[in-house]
Length: 506
Ligand SMILES: *Cc1c(COP(=O)(O)O)cnc(C)c1O
Image 1 (cartoon, rainbow, N blue to C red):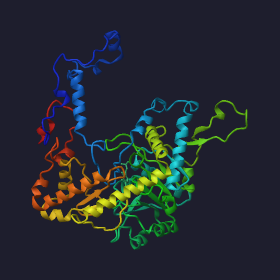
Image 2 (spheres, rainbow, N blue to C red):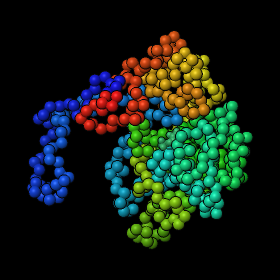
Image 3 (cartoon, rainbow, N blue to C red):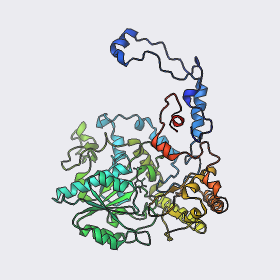
Image 4 (cartoon, helix red, strand yellow):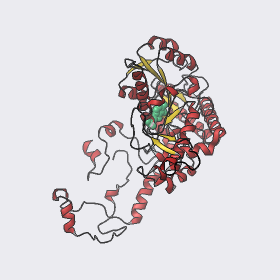
């Protein structure tokens, strides 16, 4: 495979007759198997699977795991992704059999603890958002965006204002924002940023009006900058009859410091898998709860967790005396947006994280995240262009314009960082910054790690100037070299086909 240094595939290992584990003899009569499975579905020959010893399998997968980069291995300043350390105690709690072995069809009486956890997590998230109620159902940030926009749509339709068909989105927005709006059937109206990297109030005045259903905003925005005009913006949108949607995927700068609800936002989504301690980046389950203002509560997806009023002593034994229940009796609800109740074990981690941090701990996390980002920004500013030079929040965006003039692009710098055992920052996003390098250190790194990163980035800036070819051909020290991204996108090889497809197509 292109760029890959002799790493055998599992299918190429082993030898006939090698065994890891012997299964008991099949005790189902083979005749019964043939009756159960139609013959056209039976293989004429056994599948050509590799035959390996247990140790070979263990070495293969352990070897693979060591070729991955993760936050447990090294620094991971991937902007907009909040790759912070996720305390292992939260993993332990999510693995408790009482949580991990629940079945979604269990009777309510047997899952009171789980429902209580969901109810309390909802309350904590509402407190952090400054809003009334929340749903924990959405499975990711983008799913939360879609759900939130569906609520906005239901709200307008219910008021006889279904003609509002425009969602305003700034040019610095995360790509999921316009995608979610379009998926919800809205027209996307872009609003420009000003010289300071904020939404231009003048440009907004031009586009807001009777067709406006809402405005989607990230604050701090994807440049890591706080929208200082947010109260003016929210007043403008509300007085035109629109609602405000807050993309809170990266809430890492605002926990306990300020609340989207107080800024005027009506819907907020959080990414539990970014801000609230669930490992991510490998494509595992996420969770994108949304919190809403009172006027949107009737439209929330079903079910919501409710608590019955306490009954008088001795009254209502049995089912009716149970505290928590799933409420499906919601006539204005947009319906179900996810199988069952959402990704429950992600909720367990977030609940454990919030409880173990407490209000003070969450506030401290945000302060430390902002401090770390500003420290890096100040130290890297002399060597890289900083298009929006003001105090940042949890992240900041450099431009590699100067390095590009020498022949080393943002992509080359990102690849070179891998040689130093550091994950690349987010590159070429946000789109309004040329050769963007978007850096988010998070609160969980020590100053020593930040200093090492600064040293490496300064060394790379020097290399760009003196020997850009070092960067153009990077990475040099990783297991996999620079890949052909176009070929990988056009001809992804995601399963073994008994031949080297990449080479065959190349
Ligand atoms: C990550 C992110 C999203 C999308 O979240 P997913 O869980 O990946 O769908 C949306 N907006 C911003 C600003 C993000 O950083």
